[in-house]
Amino acid sequence: MSHDVSRRVFVKAGALSLVSLGFDPLFLGRTAYAQRVPARGPGSKTLVCIFQRGAVDGLSMIVPYADEWYYRERRRIVVPRPGSAPDAALDLDRRFGLHPRLGALKPLFDAGQLAIVEAVGSPDPSRSHFDAQDFMETGTPGDRATRDGWLNRCLAHDREHRDTPFRGVAMGPQLPRALQGSAPALAIGDLQAFGIRAPEPARDRLTAAFEALWSGAETGIVASTAAESFEAIRQLRAANPAQYRPADGVAYPAGPLGHALLQVAQLVKADLGAEILFVDVGGWDTHVNQGNGANGELATRLDDFGQALAAFARDLGERMADVVVLTMSEFGRTIRENGDAGTDHGHATAMFVLGGPVRGGRVLGRWPGLAPEQRFEGRDLAVTTDFRDLFGEVAARHLGVAQLEVLFPGYDLSADRFPGVLA
Image 1 (tube, rainbow, N blue to C red):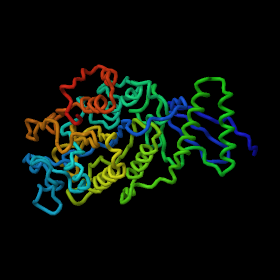
Image 2 (image 1 turned 30 degrees about the vertical axis):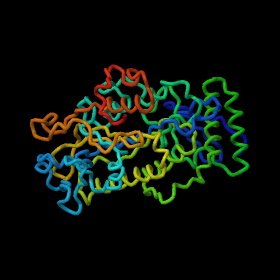
Image 3 (image 1 turned 120 degrees about the horizontal axis):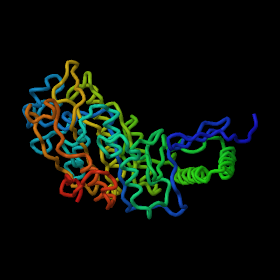
Image 4 (image 1 turned 45 degrees about the vertical axis):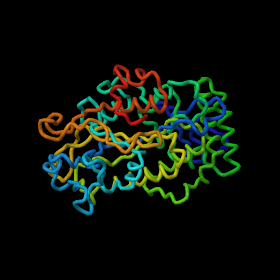
């Protein structure tokens, strides 16, 4: 077989994949616009979004132990009141308690770095994972015609900062809907594997061959896209992610979320100009054997979730002054447990906001109550905070987005409805 590089390429859904002969493929998500000028350094604001796909049970994650209906509707999967059992909820404010397997986050809450927003969600009544996730990522509930994501519109708001291919990065093999759009963004499955993987010195020859190949392409957009891709490879190689070591005493959990957040910390500390970073974590669709405070599928997931977030905060240390972590999930779970000791698709849930700029130590949002007459459609926790009000507050007060109507078309976003997670 010839050592010449073939023009075997494909472009699909805005993602570029370069396939080399005889070596592992290079996968890049949407490639970024790079002006070859220095990236933003320390002091720049970074938003880390974590999507809990599958609809997390906010009523077990943040236990409304002061509401008697929680205990009347859940017998097998109930999380005990604070102080009533070894696996009881951890009291937050005499109304709500943290799931005991999220104990690693309690010091962050007590230190005022973690805020919780209750009864947050979408006004759209869909209980379809696909539709609800799509609406939350596009920022247009009920509108299936929206093609770009609200985070991509965030990136597009300020052209002045377009100086690095790493402004928007998804840690995964493909770009999520939230980051798709006209503003450039990258999808990276693994920092250490990012780039062309081949033995030295063949790798440099292969890189040069790809650059020469794409620079001669007939369409300017493909040529510039390839150049931007290789610029990202060069910058990341210079950052040398293989040599990264977390801060002293910090150990990330071994699961996918821990690995993803470790890589997010690498990108932040490398000062490559990361502004918006996106992480997916699945497994929250607990229809069967959800478990209680100590045991079950949800407890295991929450333990990993809390440990990963706490490790990330400790790893960044003082850098957390410029970082906000926002968690989200497409909807919550039913108030009443089902016949399989689980919960079904619901409506509102709870979301976390973590970081140095956060006005934490509080459970925010108006609690609608769990009594039958207070429920959405007679079965679910009602939404009292539209997710766009929470996301809009983070975009405005942390990232400095001024034109909020561009982020959420058709929605009259007002600071009066912000839940108050940031100063």
